[in-house]
View 1 (cartoon, rainbow, N blue to C red):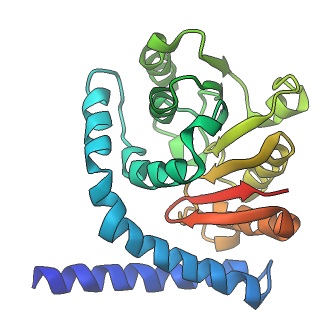
View 2 (tube, one colour; view 1 turned 90 degrees about the vertical axis):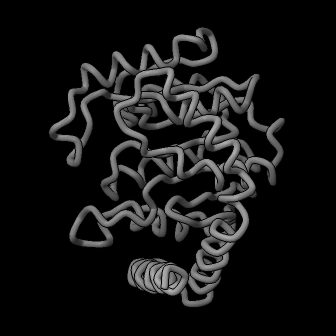
Length: 256
């Protein structure tokens, strides 16, 4: 019975999210472009279940144990580790030197990246004020936890306490180009789209953008969520990018 329940649960998960992807994607890209994306989502889901979660379980457990020594109120990250490691090993970890993170919260993903890419440097853009879904969170504590959690990486990270619009408008990246950009700031479509377009302009060729919460349904209008921004971005940069992995997050590579 457990096996049947497990199978049914995953089939329903796929059906629900395939429909979600379809309803938004069709507004921006053609049938011949969104069908391969849906197929990739299904393939990657089963790849994660059948291989990646098992292959990288030791890495995930190691990092989870490491986080117990620090100050984290929530764990919204470690379930992503198997997919991240799969993508990073495909592209080669020696190619990631400069990282931009939009939305750092308590620094868990920053810590993982600094730990995994031993020579990398990361710029963290974080307001410590949150957005719609963070009304009940004490952001003074969040900021304190961030500073504590990254204290071992002095000289390898820089915090920009501001929103991403100010970061890009004032060109605080200082003519730097990044190899990896993680977009996890505001989850409202227009903000995510602006972050994506601005990020693309300072992303190295063969660099990767990771969009968090690609499948999250926070706003009632599906198109107002992260997924709407992603497909609008894909529509704009179609032949300049490649979707390389899709799960709850989506990974997009700049090819031109």
